Length: 98
Image 1 (cartoon, rainbow, N blue to C red):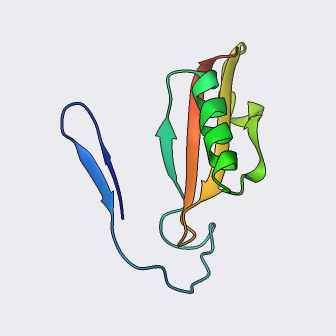
Image 2: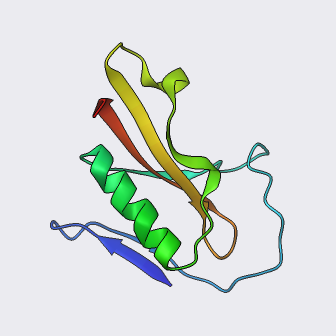
């Protein structure tokens, strides 16, 4: 079980047992869940935490994704990984490139 709660009491819960399934990230249904951060350093801190806890980082992340950044001087900086039941998760910073 995982619960995420903000300072206003808004929460997001994931409950259930892990099953042996194969998710097609580009198939029908949710592709991934993204959580935005305030800084690029937050993405790096999350990546460090994930590595320290044995979570595999996917798609050569963390990295900048210029194809998603839009304006010059801006960045889309992400780390991607999966939950134990293979739901694709992203932690992302969008804003001025550090």
